[in-house]
Length: 221
Length: 209
Image (spheres, rainbow over the protein chains, first blue to last red):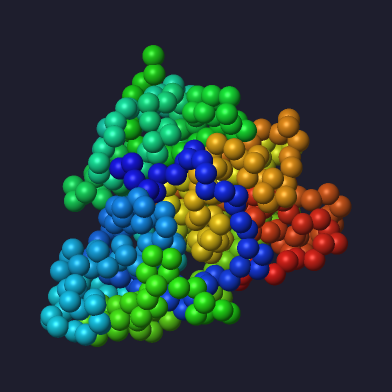
């Protein structure tokens, strides 16, 4: 979706402002929002792509005005409500009004270190899967489209020619996984775009490289 | 730490709202309060850019490790004990005298958590995400870094689970230094590509965890 999150190449946001000696969190509510989001996500009530999609679905004006952890908070509330895990009435004052529902796997303190260290790998190797369509060095072009649903192809790279740097492996396809269509694993490639094909003369980059899943690509003539 | 002077920008009562949500989720049994504390503690004290600095300084002192790191970043990094959440699939980008790499996530905030911790605010901000991908030299200037025009700048848009760590060049004048000493020169910013390692003699700046 071309929402408020799709910022690559936009102008007018002003300079980057590094903060020397920046703390990990700037307020206690940020700390709690971070931990609640990771812990709730670890239960398996939704997947990482659904979580990203919930953040990116905020109206663009809100997305751009909100601070980072406000976006996380709003997305977490929306995911919990959509799964029926909390009610809007409960969210207003924190008072429990509806009995809890079962969640797949609540994260217990003793498991935190192990689960973080294991992570949630997105590769889905399958020896009998169809082989990758493209190989390193192949010229490809991203398909033109403007899906209203979740995608990881930023709009600045839509319909652009690039070169396959390598096939990374068979990975969960976020476009499906965020939309209730399952993991639908696809070959994922590192694709390098000459910066001039993206921005003409208005760039100081030599190239921009990103992950593209096979359905994003077609062979370039 | 200034805990209460950062209200939300669209939710002025965010502090109260988060407390209400937390008590609700705990009461419903969806989250374990001790797990929340462990998560915060982990990213405030255990997982941060010092991990990445150990990876880089090892690569500077051990050619075999360096080759492995560039070939299979995930495995080589895991061998030092850094793995998992936010770094399940790692790629290490080698800076050379002619190539400088810079990492951004234009769509959100994808960042290599096991080696750098949580991303700083500027990395997640609209100015960086919008500009890095089109005018990296302009961004580097905002960090006080001017690279020679002959150096090619490669930008990596970290748009999903593939996460990147920049392997900066080892500073001149560090011959004979061991990996621990070299690690003190490796800054977080040099591993994102918006800075260079410190020069020998410069003190390491205070950085979060």
